[in-house]
Figure 1 (cartoon, one colour):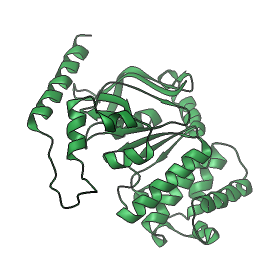
Figure 2 (cartoon, one colour; figure 1 turned 90 degrees about the vertical axis):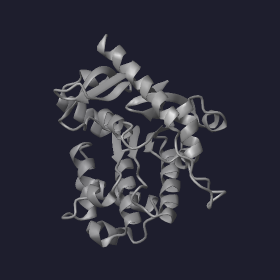
Figure 3 (spheres, rainbow, N blue to C red; figure 1 turned 180 degrees about the vertical axis):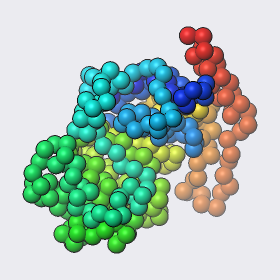
Length: 290
């Protein structure tokens, strides 16, 4: 049974006809890791923000539903939605330096959520923060909790964000390209850590990325997006064996080959881009007429 279901989700810029999401439908089962894949601007992060209720004020959802654990989030009052999301969902953001408040020490940036949303007392929340830093393999966790973000490396900051995301035992985590700002060696460590934490806690994970290599390592299913529209939905094994959509095949062909580091990159052919643009245009015509 799906823990999260999006059905026909469509969004646009307020006061315009500029479409950002086009009838997006996908689901994530309890404990599943689903990748959202596509080029920059495909709508991956927009989907994550729509689920979490943190879309920019300039964006509005105009159709569709977001059902989380049997409840349509679109039907809830803002305060009730925030309460439900705070207890059930969390975000691992893209840039650990900007995501952490530079003027506050690490400890309250983990514990405040536990105190304010779950009603824990401060001592219990601090004990949980210390436990989590140990779980994400941070040395000297007591010192780190007393530190400010600028005193820590990028890899340590990202581990703190992972610990914070898992702190309240959420049922769903949206990971928005969580390794983009890190070097390759640290990326590998962080991906391994996210996988360990996800399996240990049994959390459903929506993993936003443009890197198909990452998808092959951490995801069980994936949705390929172009222009705010899902063009392919598949399990990972079937996708890498035989992607069904021409755009998916072109993306896979364009990915760097780690077995051939000196090989040239293959751009997505213009004919494939034009064909998928026609699909997007057809979806827009359907939207306009109905």
